[in-house]
Image (cartoon, rainbow, N blue to C red):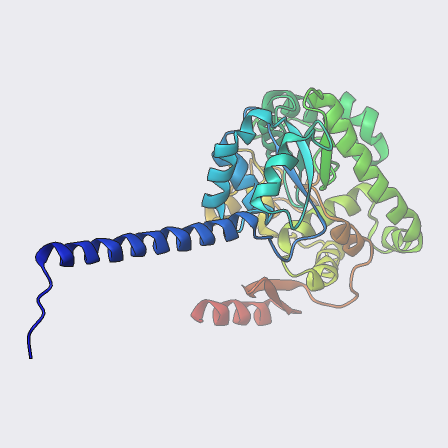
Length: 365
């Protein structure tokens, strides 16, 4: 039987055909995968998603904004789709309302359309201080930090918009020489859509108005509770708001808000110092810091409830509606102490000895 030999040129030709076929298959496979990602639809989003586009936004920042709202399941693919389409050139600053299931290819056309609202979104979460509000507003171009801090320290401006009954009188200069913060506690935590040319003063007035829209209905609804608190503990509406701000900063698990409120009221009734750690760092240079034993000894801070008896001079943050309700309707009990035990929870005690044992037990864990 004769042997057939395949010539060397024949072998090379066959390998070339196989290689070309493999490359074509790979290209087609990658192309199909890319096409699928370009046209795939995000899942789990609401029907409409709001996305804020700031002036002079970069393509990277735009993709991040879309990703953060769940509209970019494949950020790298979206980046190149928008880049090749030149979408950024047609995007205007403002708030866009986009379908929650929009694909990358559809986003190109949607972002070229005019925004739903030609402005910026100022989002303030509960628990922020006036200094943090000033920083966030300034970041969006809504005035400067200095302007907002100056207005927050202006008693006449605060009295005109908050009202003297809730504000109280003008305060003595702080021993630590920081400016007073009359607007603290009265800047509602919420999302506000405002035009980018809105002045700092108008922004603050809007935040105060929103606080009043939250507080006044609560004050009416829980009028009997307010009167009972006034009779039992001698607190005013202003002091209830101060207590709400302390609750806001102390509580992570909202199921404990009313119980923590009860502890504060019990301590006030017994003329005990409140000794709540968040008051230790209520200074502009301590925002975000963890309270330390050294802070407890700082009597120059008038908000330090370890050094000073009673309530601090004013609120220490913007309280949520839940914290305002807790301050209006505290849980009735005889607890006087609590200690954080992890997971946002606290252990409560009726006596100092029991409290000390719980602190030691927690430290050993």
